[in-house]
Image (cartoon, rainbow, N blue to C red; front, side, top):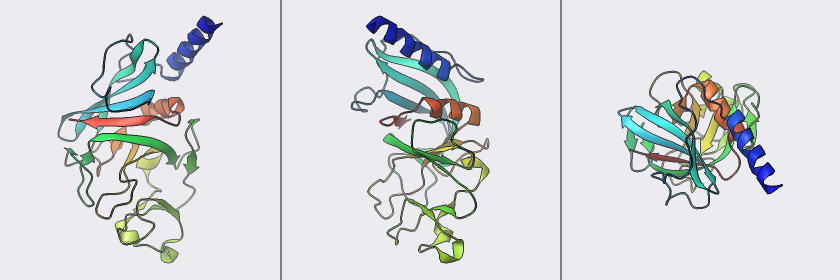
Length: 221
């Protein structure tokens, strides 16, 4: 029975994360990836490694009884227009390096079937507060622009094409002023980001269907 369950689990992973255009197929488990000592008990890791400037490559890993298995590699990825930085900083369009939780997701499109909590952005009243001086800093807010209790000019309206699908990266979860806000793993428009991580929407949807609570994203140069 245990062997049957393991086989069914492996089959489910292969179906959900079947290779799509621009990605290499799964590898064999056992190799120790660069992030192995930094992700605690996480069993799902989205690895992002810079290839220079605002470009990076993504690899998807699952921890198994035999070790870490690469489920998909070589995914073209866009990061901040200022490349990567050791830490997030408000107003600096660099993607912060480190390991961050992937706790929730949202998008202008309906939930594609992710295992994470999902909020559909249904109209122009959805924001991510970037106002360092507001208790709403670095959180999703829903309000008409004229009634928002934070500075909308310093915030992001979430009804944009790049947020067709997005996963919230746990950057500056303590909401430290100046420590940056609105860092997401989202749909690419083919351009550098303001500090987020972006891939093709079909790739993103496939990954979102696989993600479960406890997953992390690990970012490095």
